[in-house]
Image (cartoon, rainbow, N blue to C red; front, side, top):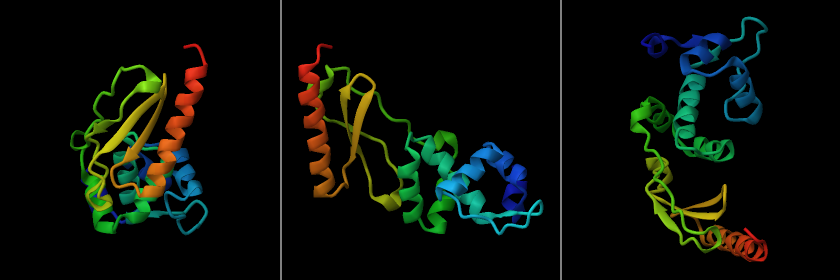
Length: 167
């Protein structure tokens, strides 16, 4: 939509339509802190360029299967230029995660995943462990030592628990 590139302000429903979400979703993102609250003017409340950029970036990060908490962290680290670049990436520019291993859950070896998050985050790949059917643990290659240790403890805990349960 070329109108979204030239406009500076949108009503709630117009903004939601421009990005492909519901007005309720926009309000929820404001409540969660993913979007800044617009200046409240009752029925005349308008959303600005930053809201549009952030919503587009949220959609791009959701296409990478990131949870909202991770998206919120990522948004806080991105500059306005990086937000715009991320939001302008079309759905075909967003890499899909590669298929994981089908090895038995507690014994699955970490699998390097080529799932880039964004250039600014410095994440080039992820390790993925399938801990149990339907339960995965993902660890960025840029995670600090404390986070890596936590991931290993969680993996060991699940592995110990899983070993005691009949699959």
